[in-house]
Amino acid sequence: LLKKDEWENRFVDDFFLTGDYGKLSHDGMLYISDRKENLIISGGENIRPSEVESAILNIDGIEDAYVCGLKDNKWGEIVSALLVSNKKWRSEDLKLKFKEILSSYKIPKRVAFVKEIPRNEMGKIIKSEAIKIIMNSGISL
Image (cartoon, rainbow, N blue to C red):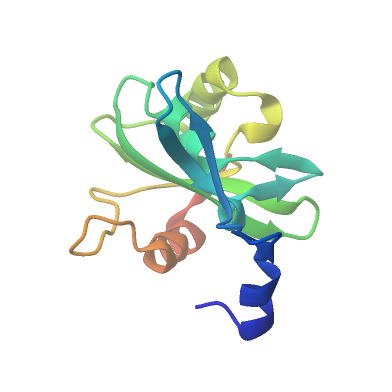
């Protein structure tokens, strides 16, 4: 939950700023794509996790993905990923595949593989658990 001052700062000219990124379709439908609080800032570049996830999910063999930023002394944050795959990946091959589909600054620097990404009963990713897995068992690319 937001603290009182954070809540009050979200009101601007009688509008409530949700912190969501989205776009309007040609028929007027609003599609939410990400949250501002999830934005990864790595080396001064702004990276939306949903963009990286979408690209990674187009890789043959990747069945599910969660992307987040992890604190890093050099970069501020590094792009990190928790992946479910139906094939074994060598780190060199995965990095090459990422280079084919992502700008260099969007390539995950840390990756972990699991059989299933942790989700709650509503199907939402349990971010704290996913981050622990990446930090504890992830490999650096």
